[in-house]
Every structure is written in structure tokens, then in C-alpha cells.
Length: 407
Picture 1: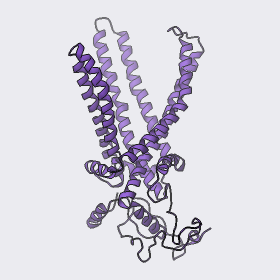
Picture 2: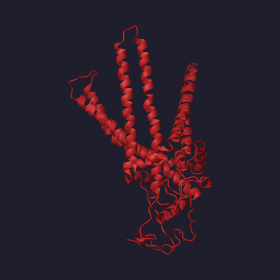
Picture 3: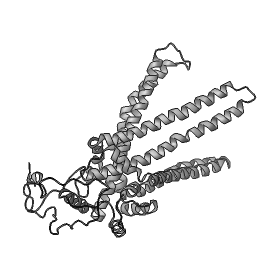
């Protein structure tokens, strides 16, 4: 056991750690000031690499990542460590959200569809068209319920993961209840942001589809032009959406950690990613490829089993109720849904964690956030009053002047 582990503040008992959200605004002495410490300002430390220059110390790592600008390998690997470090709060939250969406979809869409189709089957020939139109409308309306739940659930999970990764970086491990309580405070802004993203995506697709439709109905030459425009337009829209998403991908982090408005978050995300676009895009793209490849490897065998069982149930398009393979088809389908929910939960945790780590890394590189985080950890260990290190200095000064406390 090292001297640091044996040390206790004057008075005998170690000072309790303040909970997140309860920081005061007494400024912490700057690095290098009297009573503070600077990593590397001491002599050769135990555990330093042999031959290192006197005064060198490795960057502190109180939690998930070392408090220094991250290498690309760390940026890719750390999101997967989030699942192992606090699985009950992270994976558990994502799994609950996924299950709620799936159950809501089955209950609302499935129930309404069964009722509507039953009415169509029972309607007489004169009223069948009217009943069918009403059935289609009711099914379409019921489909809005899981869509709305998906939007709110996605926004809420982003808030949970931003808070978890930010606190894990400082060595804190919050419970699911604490994470949900903190994420709920910014749920409104996060939901609006998810709606904006969905609106932009739908708008771009509708504009392209409308243009292609106009060309196709204009005549034989228009059909050929429409095909070309559709292919090139789809590629162009894909590039445009990828660029816009990368430039604004840090918005959830800014909404939660810096308490910024949506407009200010968009502008600040744009600024932070300037000069680091390809690094930001590459990290998110590579993690997405990894998790999707793993998901396909896991789900493909079960999908093949389900398809084989269905072929056994109805080889010629007719269902044999006595065929035992129908049980296999039902069981494999249920297992496929459950496995998809589990994989979707893990995927959402890893991808959301990647965005938060990119945000922390960019602030370390551009704003010296690593120094603020080191000061926070040092002050916390000595029992000093500390402020939230993720708030920008302008926000901290404004809150101090107004006599306010962070949320």
C-alpha cells in the first residue's frame, strides 16, 4: 500500500466525497499554486518508467480513462469498458428502455391491428371498403405510440450515458436511480434535439423522393434521369447527413454537462469538431461497424434457424397445424426478438459512450479540460469544496455571480 493510500486529512476521518450536483463555487487553487500539486512537479515517483526524466509522472487515471488527451485506440476501446464498469446502471437502463418500446409496440400496434383486421373480416361487402380504410388509419395512428416512445427513450438514454461517462472519468460510480434523476432534468431539451434530427432526416428523404417522382412521371426520358438522380442524390444525401451528424454529434453532451440551450449546443458542437472532423467521424464510424458486425455474428445463426423452421412449417405455402416445426418457429422468433433487444441495448450504450468520450477528448485538446479534471480529483481527495469541472468558465462565473448552484 502506498503513502497516498494511507494518507488521511487532518482530523483522522477521511472527508466524505460530495455527490455530483452538490458542488459549491469556491474556486480551487490553480495548478502549481501553494497547496496544489502538479502532476510531474514532484521527484521521481514509484512506478515511473525506468530512465524517465526526473519529475515525470504518468497522467492520473481515477476512473474510466487517463486524464489526458486520448489516443485513438483508447477512444475506440473505452466505450466497451463502460459496459463492464457499471453494467447495472448502463446496460440495465438501455435494456429497460428497449423492453418498454418492444412491449408497447406489441400491445398497441399488435392489439389495434388484430381488432381492426377482425372488423374488416366481419364487415359485409357494402361496408368493407369503409371499414378497411378505418382499419388502415387506426393501425397507422397506433404505430405513432412506439415511435414516440422510441424518441423519448433515445433522448433519455443519451442523458443517462452522458452523465455516466462524465462521472466515470472522475472515478465515480453512480446508481441507476441517480443517473435517471440527473438525466431527467435535461430530458425536454434532449427530446427536442432528437425530434430535430428526425425531422431533418425525414425532410431530406422527402425532398429527394419528391424530385425523383416528378422526373419519373414526366415521361420515358424522365424515368432514366430520375434513376440517375435517385442514385446520385441518395449518395449525396448520405454524405450530407453524415457530415451534419458528425458536426452536431456532441449536442447531447453539451445539453447535459454544460446546461446549454439547443441553439448554443449546436454552435459549440460545430466549433469543437472544427479541425477534428475526421477523427470524430472515424471513431464513431469504426465503433458502429464493430458493434454491428458483432450483432450480425450473434443474430445470424438464430435468424437462419427461424427461416428454416418457417420453411418446414409451410414448405408449399400451406400451414400444417400438426407439424411440430411450428413450435420451433415460434420459439426461435421469440428468442430472436429477445436477442435483438439485448444486442440493441448493448449497442446503444457503446455508441452513446463513444460520443461522450469524443467530447471529453476534444475539450482536453482545445480547452485544457484535463487540467480541470485533475484539479477536481485532487481537491475532492483533500476534502476541499469543488465545482463541476465540466461547466465552461463563463457559465461558472455567471452562476457564481448570481449566487446559483449547478443543477
